[in-house]
Amino acid sequence: MKAIVCTHFGTPEELEFVDIPEPQPGPGEVVVRIKAAALNFFDLLIIAGKYQNKPPFPFSPASEFAGVVENVGTGVTVFKPGDRVMGSTGWGAAREAIATAGDRLVKLPDDLDFERASGLTVTYATTLYGLRERGELKAGETLVVLGASGGVGLAAIELGKIIGARVIACASSDEKLAFARSHGADETVNYTTDNLRDALKRLGGARGIDVVYDPVGGDYAEPALRSLGWEGRYLVIGFAAGEIPKIPLNLVLLKSCDIRGVLWGGWTLRDPQGQRALMQEIVRWCAEGKLSAHVHAVYPLADTANALKAIADRKVMGKIVLQP
Ligand SMILES: NC(=O)c1ccc[n+]([C@@H]2O[C@H](COP(=O)([O-])OP(=O)(O)OC[C@H]3O[C@@H](n4cnc5c(N)ncnc54)[C@H](OP(=O)(O)O)[C@@H]3O)[C@@H](O)[C@H]2O)c1
Image (tube, rainbow, N blue to C red; front, top):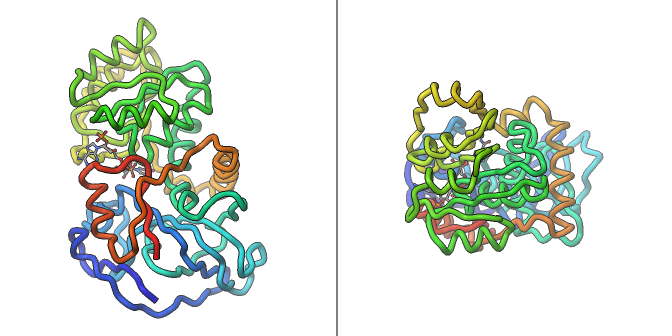
């Protein structure tokens, strides 16, 4: 079967499109024929050797996928050949089939297509865990989302609205902000043309912002933190801008506010049952049309390098999907 493999840390162009043996299921494992695999920003970091997870070579990027169960290993009772499923494995899905632990899979409702389902796990689960468990976001509170048209950013707009928050979407272009509004954002800020601090001060009013969701970092972090109100929560999601911000701690003291880390992958290892329950909510909301799981573009598997370059160039709104 065909696979994209990373044989050494480097750029998307250094990935190889090769033939590898078909996978066989071990005990408790399921082999899934992949119909769609979704990319995330962190795939760029994994292949560059800049991510917290460094898989042994050769490995395939793409941590999430949707497809059809082909066969199952001993001890697997929940899945059978022909079942439509989706899952997330950290890496390894940029290939035609994958063997993975059965407990990392979720069955798909009939009306959820493979392309949208493939990109549903990482972004929405990270964000629901982040906003609800770590951010304690409540109905009526104000949520600021940075990088709002990206994968996790879009999820934060949509889940923020389901929770009942007022959502302020921040992004680098008017096109991205129009996209954010069409997915539910109440207010928008273009942080390339507007001063982020002034805009959030105006939109936050006397009370200030309750929760900031930050997958970008860099120069936007400090002005966003300064916009928080009393006992506000700042959620550290990632650093797509490249630079890890350094925050003066007096700001945290003066607002009695919290800076809270969100490491979804670490949480799933500690609470797999919680993650399964969370995914059931996400799949149901998606089937009900409350979550878009918007797919920006579908690339053939052989064209994975260009798909990753589109993410690096900030050209993507929602998700990029690979089709084997
Ligand atoms: N903590 C967790 O558990 C967890 C889970 C999943 C992802 N993440 C992290 O969340 C971040 C976003 O992931 P994603 O998959 O949603 O990414 P994405 O779809 O590429 O979105 C990232 C957004 O960041 C903004 N950005 C600003 N500077 C950028 C730059 N130099 N290069 C690329 N984008 C830039 C872009 O929006 P503008 O152009 O509008 O600025 C872009 O839409 C990553 O750092 C990822 O590692 C964390």
